[in-house]
Length: 257
Image 1 (cartoon, rainbow, N blue to C red):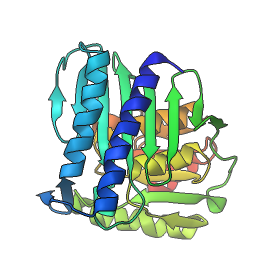
Image 2: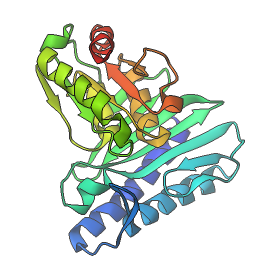
Image 3: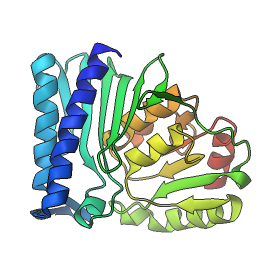
Image 4: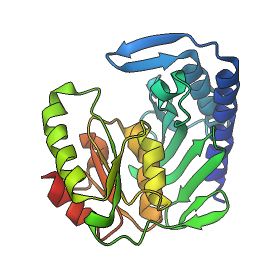
């Protein structure tokens, strides 16, 4: 395992332990950041644990984290993109679909990725050029070749309700043209499921880089394709993503139009 990936795994597991302890205790302080967007003391504690571990190992690296924003060496050639608890609303309700997401960019290119599901103790990892793994097992995207046979994941644009009409048109189309649509509520984990072949495709709008970065590299290293909804590579900047097995992505993009 790459040394930087090893540090990311250590950080993700530490954050996962914080999340699991809080899930057992049931004592949560919930605050609304925006409409339908919540944060708890667990998000903050998990993020601080991740940053502390990485910063001790790599003090000159930068960070882009959901709760604390850009910090420490923001112009460094290495930048960690962190979502300490993707799926906070699920977590608040005891719905066990949430994760820790950590990615490392090197000169703007995704290089390392970890998505850790503390509820199921599943660890998804990837290093650029070295493949993607679930625990110690190599994973690949599905062999699905037709959108009509695909199980497709999605997420509602709850932060951008102005997109709801466009999204509902997309949803109606995909309900007709795929074998099924699922919305679980944690984009990073949905993307990891595409990498593992559990979902054949995924799309969502209104996302932040920390929602997508780790999952995108997992998919690429598992043999899948990732783009924005127009098929372009700037999904992190545009805040929207389409991801799928290679033969399915063009069909997905066509359907979304």
